[in-house]
Image (cartoon, one colour):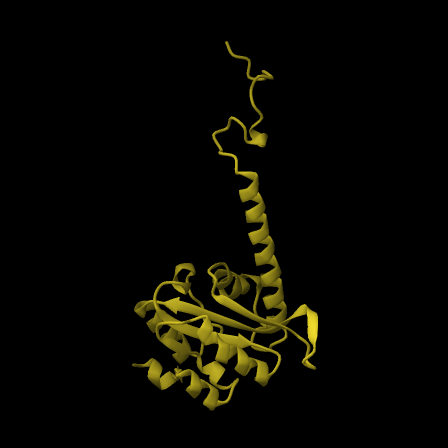
Length: 195
């Protein structure tokens, strides 16, 4: 008969002998770095969102759908500058702006258009919808002023190199129409959402 309290058994808490493979220390370090980067980025973006009336009403659960899901799917682009407002070089990165975007399928594109038509903001996508196709949507740009908003939008084409780009109507109110025209992007309005 086997003694269940025998010291020859391995301690499952240590992960040895319990069938759970041990991670390579280098992989563990890489996971810790990624986790830390997600935490840092989430915090930066959430703080920037809190400064805007259009996001202040969000609950923590809403932040999961509106920020965390796109963030872990690499659908939050952050622009930073190492120059201060005076144009002088700085050793600190300064947050210039944030773009929240998605690459969606035709079906998800239709769902987005329906949400826009219904006046839903911020838009809600299922986790897998954020990166489901080749139709690119720019949902929002968060920046401290119109100049930086325009700069983030103008540079967004570097992030999205191919495919259609559709822009949420909110963005048309954040920048001048000429910038959008230069990008070759047309806003999607409620009338077009019917199509």
